[in-house]
Image (cartoon, rainbow, N blue to C red; front, side, top):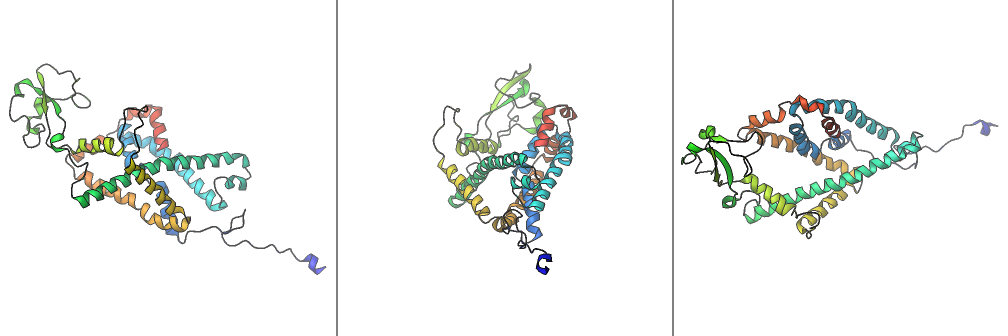
Length: 324
């Protein structure tokens, strides 16, 4: 009778065990690694190169309005919900719906995993570009040949300038040192309302076209290196070209690095985030200092943040803000 009255003893699960399998799940050794992992999850390449582009392309400072609202009502709630469900149920994207007695929503988890897979495909391509640039930089340092995207020198393409007819023959209209227009004669030049003068531009009365070859064109050199050596762009989809072995090796290195980061779960990824989560902030700070020390930096900042509130009337802009 005493034995029948005693409560049944159920074997206790190990600490941090999965409620489904009973196996112990790995834990972050400290809260810092967890916080850095969350920061690394939230801050990445998009904050460095995509967000500034979206700002100046969709209304400047006005773009911050739909972005802030999307962050407040979509981004942060979903981020907190996802993190909270993971901490409470300690399940993956499929098992969490079973724990909430919503097995029919496992498709949402499958879709999330599939999205992550496709994101990794193109993010690793971006990583391969970075590794390729790094490899070419190291190679240039050892060979002392200079960066391949540094400058074109005498191979710089000619620039088309639209000059007032009376000043076109002046030897001072073009700076002989740089091959660029003389700033002190800026009033003698004409530019279209958007972009730069082109061969198809209609020259207004009283002006003539003048061609000048700059002595330095680092921007053109960077574009040519990107298109011809990094991407090796072909004429179209019907011309696949050959294998870019340098980029192939860079992509393989990127995938190997990803494997090494996650091979032991958070035991390895928790250590990697000390670099990957802090590096974007170091890069952002370096880019900021560099940008602020360039000539006419104030004009660039004004162009970036000057608000154009008419853009808020376009649903496309709100969609881009929500995506970001």
